[in-house]
Image (cartoon, rainbow, N blue to C red; front, side, top):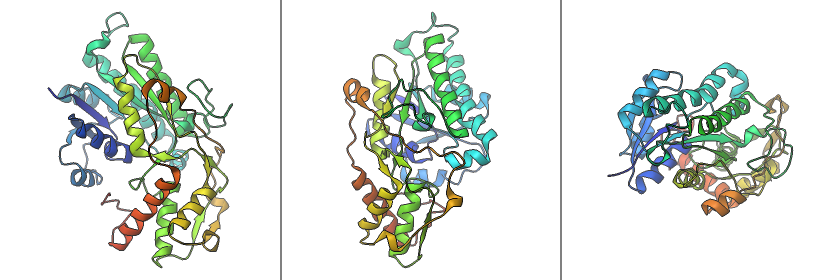
Length: 342
């Protein structure tokens, strides 16, 4: 019998890649979708014909219990969140409810469905296995570099705070109820399916527009912010690998290499044969209220215990995104609608 997985946030970048990954391994995949019309569902249907959609909302406890009862999953991947960091400043309460409290509601749905009342009643052998999408933004104002699974958190945004809440809840349910619950502390991971509001996609789209004569400049904020960027397709493999381990543990997932936004810009423009200095304008209004200057993963634990390694380099990733956006715009696609994914 095929294993069953339930994915929240399935219409996003990570959800779509994870669904593909699991389908390719013979899983039956279900994705949580809100009850009202979701414009992103159509692109998922086009990309993945074999995904079953079930109604539910991270804001509604009852709907999550119902979704778990309908799917009866072996694995639950909680990727749903208000994931754009700058938006979390504008919608801090919603971010807390979805990105933070949504984790509590999903953990409770699994616990109630499974009939777990204490760690003594939990039998991990037949349990639903839960994956929580934690984030490097939890480290924020970093205490040490690179960051490991035991580096203290100091989040610098409502998003980072909400993610830290969900991360500690996952640990707490694992320790208090004996649930198989893990968190992947994922560093920045990108792809041609990344939302147009994120800086990597903003850059690749900006380069594509300039290359095609559709724009004359690209406006950016802090060019010196440094991140550990990897390919989303690699990172969803790590999610799956975490839930196959005998013992539930948390893992940092990243490349261990950092690049500045300036490096990103130089690489992207070079991939299109352009000189970035002719087109890029820095804009102070685009800076965050509290900046996170340096994030760098130490993925040693994932490498040694899971055997996980990234397969796509930073340079390959950036070129992939630029090429995809040049093709998208050349074919008349609308990145704001995000209706056609590669």
